[in-house]
Length: 447
Image (spheres, rainbow, N blue to C red):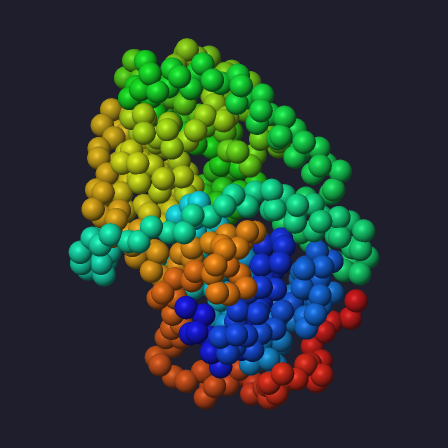
């Protein structure tokens, strides 16, 4: 609950493209928090035009700037979206000295009706225990969680905000000359990719109808599925040992050739958000032919994923949240990374070669406990782009009931300790800015 932040000072960094962080500011202020915001680029400023601090400096200067700002504002908590963005990667190290806490937003672990808000970090940066005993002790009996509010598809709004954000950055970027985005924002190429994605969605949806029927008919329970992640997913570049999606495809193919039964098939599933950017059909066909399994390897784009999971013998992912969908459908899962759900009972604990022959079973009781714990602590029912109707707040989000603040640090009151500024040679006491007063905030680097 956001009421946990009453009386606290909260700093917002970059949020999702769109007005979500402006709405979050209003909800935090309604809960009694004092809210500050940093804008890094014209797109940020477009959606958060008032009461924000503009950062014009370089990425290299950013950690020292942030350290000084946190000390001057006497910040208690930092909120950001995506802890692998350029300006967010250094935040955990900086705030460690400032005795503040970071909360990270991300797309939900439990999709499509949830978003994630987690203390400390998400995915591989998460501190969630990977011990089944923890969840069995914390959720001693499997309770029937109430059904979440169904979230309307926010894809069209997300695309709209992405286009507006990119246009603002392209037209007004001179105002923020040093800004570096974590992905390309060039409007014309992005428009081409999205147009191609629209065309491919309809083309492959039509072309794959006969194959979809085979996968739920004659091939049911005779294939393994390997859902692909997006080519620029930080889960790949930051949180895995793979350098590319092609490397993952090749490793899975090699293992399938060695370990799978002759009558079994392998289905690669393209990521829907990568339609316009990548197409692996030729690569998969060439590699499958090279290893002599060309007739047993299939590649689909727009076949319904939950249906595929229901009819699959098993699922192979790196660290995608699709893994949780596989577990939900009681489909055995092998992970080639270290996602938050990788633990005995939920995922196969042997090597991939052994998985093809004996994938095991999912401990559904453990999954229900794990899911219940996530919903209580870090899964907010809602969407970044389309607020739930009839929710009495600005974000249109139902916050997790046990979203709590825990400073730790031997229970020493934060405000009784000196604040340390990055780059200083010793602990330095800093006089914070008076509440609601930004006039004396003189930490802004020159343009």
